[in-house]
Amino acid sequence: MVIMGYARVSSKDQNPERQLIKFRELGIPERYIFVEKQSGKDFEREKYQAMRLMLREGDLLYLDALDRLGRNYDGIVSEWKYITHEVNADIVCLENEALFDSRKFKGMGDIGKLLEDQFLSMLAYVAEQERKKNWIRQAEGMQVARAAGVKFGRPKHEITPEFIEVYQEWKADKITARKAMKRIGMSNTTFYRRVSEYEA
Image 1 (cartoon, helix red, strand yellow):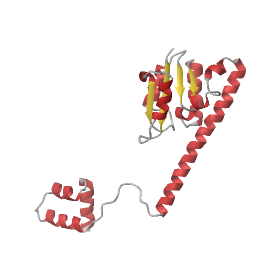
Image 2 (cartoon, rainbow, N blue to C red):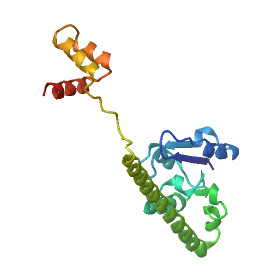
Image 3 (cartoon, one colour):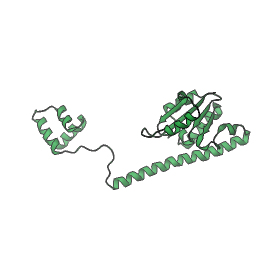
Image 4 (spheres, rainbow, N blue to C red):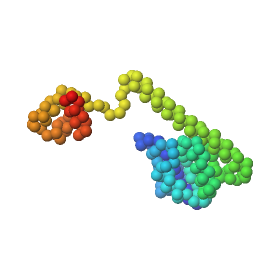
C-alpha cells in the first residue's frame, strides 16, 4: 500500500504549506506528495493526473479537504467514485475525517454506499456553491474598485512631454528607435502605437 497526499491552492501566489505540514505529520514521503497551484474548476491538472495514474488498489490518498480535489460538483463525485470504486483505493479528507474516510463506508456494505453518496453529494454541492460565491464576490469587488477609480490591467503609457522629446530626437535621427524605447521604458509595440497616435 502506498500513502499519497494531494495538495492544491487556486493560484500561484497562494501557499499550500498548511496542507503539506499535515501530510508530513502523517509520515507521507515527499515523493508521494503532489502539489498543485491551479484552479479546481476541472481535473485537467498535471500533478492531479500524475497522482491519479499512480494510484493502485489498496493505496490511500489524503486530502486536506474535499474542495482540494476540485470545485466542480459532478467532477468531484465522479473522481471520488473512480478512485474508491474503480481503482479500489481509499480517500481520507482530513478536515472531515469522521465523515469522509472511504474505508469506513466500504465496511458498511450497501448502507455504506448510500451514506457515502449522500454525504459526498452534499459536500461536493457546498464546494461548488462556494466557488460560485467567490466569483460573485470577486466581480462585485472589481465593480466597486472601478467605481472608486481603480484601473485593472497594465497601466497605459500616455503621450508625455518626455515621449515627445524622445520622439523628436528619433525623428531627427539623433537616436535609434531602440534607444528611444529604452529611455521611456516602452516595448516595441507600445512605442509605435504611441507614435501613430501622436502623428495622427
